Image 1 (cartoon, rainbow, N blue to C red):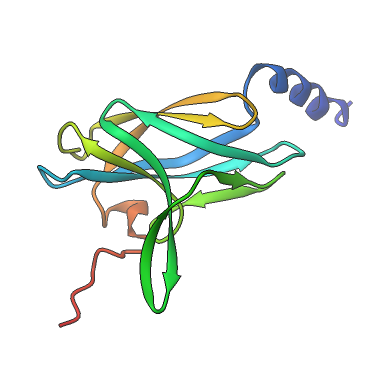
Image 2: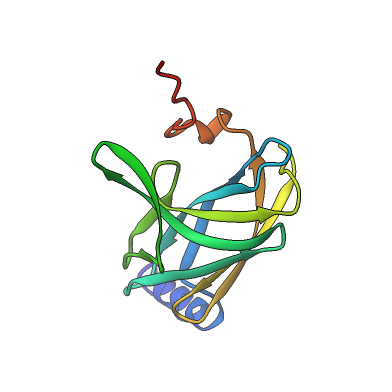
Length: 153
């Protein structure tokens, strides 16, 4: 009996919603007047084929772009990417110093404790609505990367 369950479940869910599960999502809190912020999360793909995150939208920002950080000649450069591939039966982590969703042209500052609605569009035609907590850099998970501390004088 055990063997049948996962298959039955995956057949049901495939028709209804994406195979991508999202965990550990958060948006970086911003100082008042900051024009941009970034959203981070882990995308887990339980499907047998890769799926791509194509775009994102949020009502708090004028535009939303997928970005990654490339290390070139010892410096970190931000690059916009067309999509972010979530490998088959694998996961991709959007984190400081790596892939992230850029929120550009914020309507207002994002305070810790706020929630941000983010909509993700995937290559399999599905969309996911997320409510992400706003977290100050340096609290909890936002520590990872800590790339805001460039005070080497």
